[in-house]
Length: 214
Image (cartoon, rainbow, N blue to C red; front, side, top):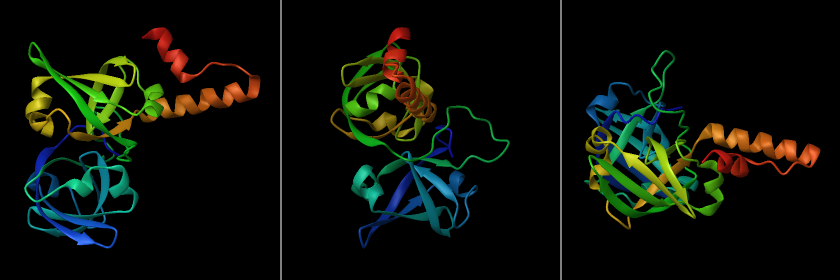
């Protein structure tokens, strides 16, 4: 489990092919201090298992569904990535609960400056929209962010300068792909509402509920 508060920006030092995936060697001196072989680490929002450690560099293996559902398979040597070690008992939850299980990749549709803030508009798959609501949480490349607006199939997020400068958001470009994980609590509420609807025939859903308060 993670919180969406990036500990540092890491550097991909090498990408080696594996059967059905890749092994990534990533440098992140601050993050490595919290890691051990077998530990979990969040790389651009994707939960990965550390398979080797050597100085400030750790290695993870991305295969199968991780390659299919995330951007990790598109990384090359020299790429910058958001890093966060797994949450420990007693750690502050500064963002929101993030599992590192990416729901989908999405296209960056717009980047607009609004004063000191940067507005990101992301083309989120329609099946995930019901889990988003204004002032709700969403994880983009492992960053805990607050939704500013939901319109049609697009979610807009406001990023403060502190977050922009300390994550890979600073290098975002229109047309790029990002990893998206919707709010875990929204998923559970949606499931509970769906179960209630099946039991009593109610049409109440998370989508209609969030729409009332948007």
